[in-house]
Every structure is written in structure tokens, then in C-alpha cells.
Amino acid sequence: FHDGSGESGDCSGNLNYMMAPTVSGSDDYEKFQNSFKLSICSRKQIEAFLLNETSLCVRRHRARERRLRRTSYSDGRKKPGELFLQQHQCKIAFGPQYGVCKQHEYQMKNNPCKRLWCKNRSTKRTASCETKNYLPLFDGTKCGVRKWCIAGNCVINNKEDNSSAVLM
Image 1 (cartoon, one colour):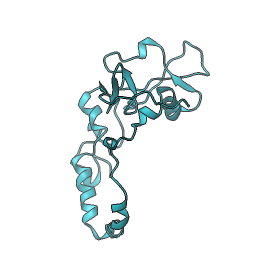
Image 2 (cartoon, one colour):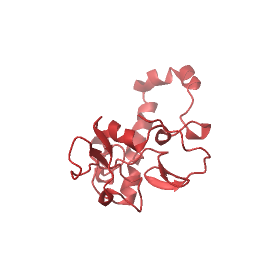
Image 3 (tube, one colour):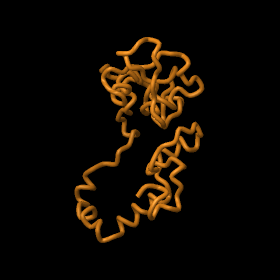
Image 4 (cartoon, helix red, strand yellow):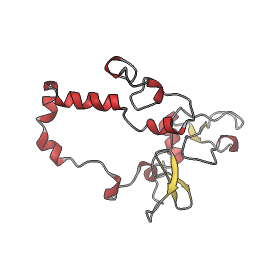
């Protein structure tokens, strides 16, 4: 269920958690951070499902589960933004004719990671750029000297090599 309905009625859908029925255009920092998390109602529903008989099929596959390692960036693997440049992120989000928006009025100087702004390359140079609500740049996207995007924020990158993005 989505937040704000059914068994999740106690959790407001307006707080922009991952299971909110819609996302809001608010620039509220806390709501933006919520889009990366599950609400307490969603977590309770997942726990209740896993404790219910209907989840036996999930629990039967414990051997397979043990073979699968938990996804983590701390094991040396690259973050998505290290693999895909902003230009390719635009193509993923909007389509092959899109690229990075270079118009200064769309750039968020205080936090360049918060929203991915893209431009349809088949339109005039003066045409508007586009974004989507709560569409941050991929984690690992370079956002400054020795900085990268993590959860929509530009933070210090302590990792040595951040130059291996693929050009697509």
C-alpha cells in the first residue's frame, strides 16, 4: 500500500517517502531526503509480510539468499554516477535526444546534485530545460573538485579515482 492509504493510513503521503502515492514539487530538504527512505508504515508492512505464512516462499530460499551478497558501495564497486556521466543520466531519464542543460538559470549553485536538469537537443537553444520532481543526480556523479553527489547532496569524495565514467 502507498503511504496515506489502507494499512499505511497513519503515514502521510505528503512526506514524500519512497511509497508516497505521488511526489511533491517542494524544495523542503527533509522531504527530499525522505524520498530515499521507507516510512515507518512501509517498514511495518514489510516486516508483517515477512512474518506471515504467505512469505514462506521467500524464506524457503535461504540458501540462495546466503549466496547473494548485500549490495554495498563499501566493497570497492563503483557508484552509478561514476559509471554514467550527467549526459547519459539525461538520456536515461528523458530519452536519447536529451543532454545536459547548460543554461545558468537552471543550475543550482548551492546544491548541483539536487536535481538533474536536461535539455532536448532537438529544440532551439533558447528552449526551456526540463527536470522531474525529486530527480537527483546519480550517487557518485562528480560535482566539484574532489566532490561527488550522494543522496542529492554534493559532498567530499575521499575515494582516490573518480574519473572512470563511461561515455555513452
